[in-house]
Image (cartoon, rainbow, N blue to C red; front, side, top):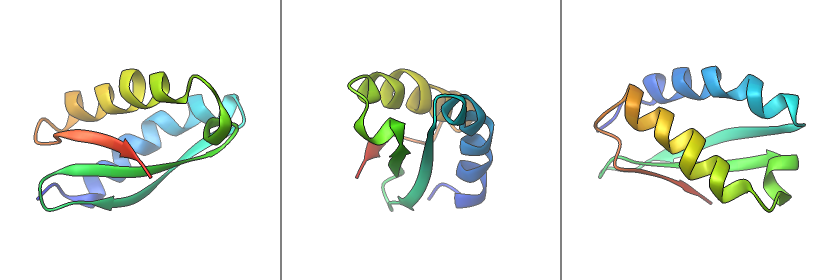
Length: 75
């Protein structure tokens, strides 16, 4: 299973970009099959581009930094 500390480190690198747009991301869980579940907060929670941010930004960086991550999903 992917180490939650490593996931938090990646999210902490991404977070400033989200916060500039009045949004944020919160780690909910890392599943046994290496799926990272996050909650988009603030402006990101209601933004029509949130899926692009999730898949093209957060998931891409997560997989690049932690190859064991299978996917990032919003909950």
